[in-house]
Image 1 (spheres, rainbow, N blue to C red):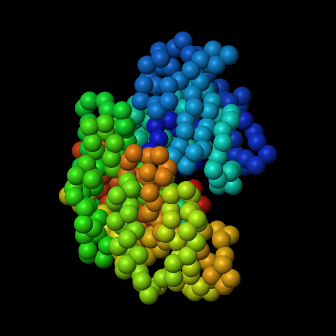
Image 2 (cartoon, rainbow, N blue to C red; image 1 turned 90 degrees about the vertical axis):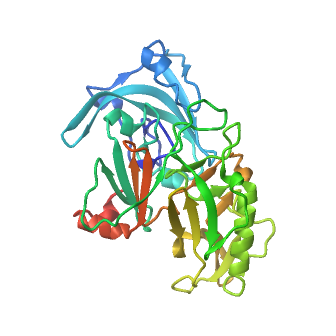
Image 3 (spheres, one colour; image 1 turned 120 degrees about the vertical axis):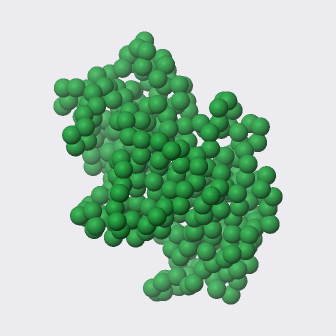
Length: 363
């Protein structure tokens, strides 16, 4: 399953499609129960979902979830018994999906579904009763490890913590179920971008919050901040990287800074690190996490690599999103008990080995 800290509802593919490797078959389960739209669960417990639920022709609790990359899934809500080790949770709510549209059908076909891990009442972590969880995403195929509960290991570095931002009153563009933190500035190779702190603070509508989202591939910044970062990174990589001089080439609709790098080159040149300055903590993004090799895009002997930061305005998103590419090889801890997020750079493949796991076999 895909681990998504930006989503609430967990769901599984329930309808067999030609390209799906795995599906969940409700008929094979004795504890599976469809949720009617007349039930209290459908009427009240779905209040945190971004789109309201509806009643389908069979009078089942029907829902649609849309994602930032324009993909969507739909199906109906159901109860099922979930087991993790010795922990058993009967009547856990999840989505049984029977249709959807995807921006990456090849990747989607490799998974059975999605694990919603945000702060909403129906999220997997809340329904299972965990007040803390950690994960570490390796740089290999985005595999990694997930630990539910306390992570106390002598080999784990001390974490830097930043508090979660709480918003008591509902605002139209503020997602109260998200893991929202306060971004206060951005540095490129120790040079702070010349921006007022006010550009990082949500406005009266809630627009401008900063969300840590493992389900979004890259990091997206509001227009003025993205422009300042793009300008400074371009300046500091002059003579180090060759810019792809194609004005109309934009990767994934929001990433317009791309480079040409010799396909035979074994490693990337030394690049200036980009550092996020959060309240009380800093996160440095360096090396491979700064550029992404676009599959299938070749210009002669060169491959196309794009800067892994995009303009959220171009996607119609009114927030900052810290995606999973920037979280690779970073130990991420979500401490709901103390309302904070902790992180530290870490070799995630080594974490897997120390836990006695083969990280390549964990997806």
